[in-house]
Length: 334
Image (cartoon, rainbow, N blue to C red; front, side, top):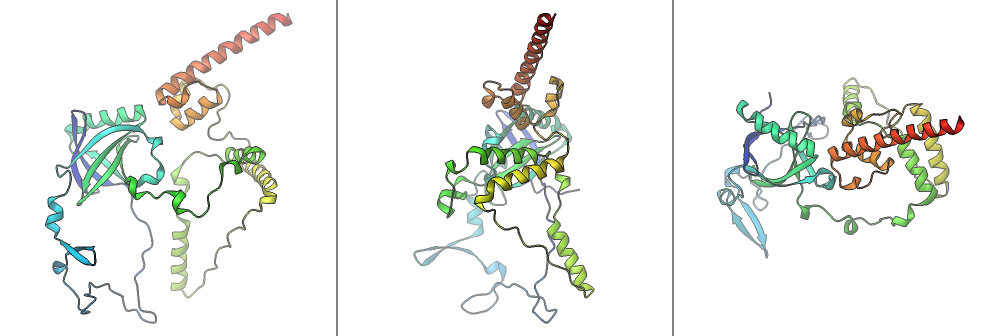
């Protein structure tokens, strides 16, 4: 069983629930040791005084911040004394739509668990409320001598906590990137065909369908070299698409994608005869797309439950209108 890396309290309003924090991911990277070429001698890193060349004991190392060519020395206990929020509280400041948080802000993911059995009811109350509202709780947390901005969100059975980058840690792409396209460059038939390609290639998100093929190749390379064998390299990356042939390339891509998908319906499209009871099985993004297809007014400001209600009403009206239209047509034919 995993060991908790932090424990404290989640607080929202006047409600508090003691929790423990666990890492949600693990590293599967193949790790190599550094050796001197031609030998099996390991390379070790040492803390060396750059002036004397002598190794320095860890207890004799302090932190220094350079100011105008000189160093301000800061002791570890001085940093501990000013650590913010030492009460170990995840204080939720407010709730936001998770879709409003750009993915660039997300850093790492952790699992939150109730600290003991008696706290499971309050824990589940927060998880269920967040899930129904389709919101994320924004809070701050101090862990291992560092303050984090975090987002708490509901998963199927647990609360997940994502550490977020601070605003001043996220670079402005307009200042950092050498080339950015103009919006008017994507329009007309090219854009329509590109959308068709995206629709043809749309799939459901199933994480188990994907695995790290590069790490597998690294393992095969190591195993082959251990046996004195060689492993062939992979193919070169494809050449850049010629802008002149862009439309033809897009059309060919759409045709290939449709052939590969067969007759099955894609993600975001629904077979005829869908009823309201099926709407609960869709994510908010799917519901929003369906609301757009049915031109539901005010959909951009709706939460998940409101979308389900609006879509159910819209479906009922469409079915009623269809039946009435059919009756009138039948009478005219008679």
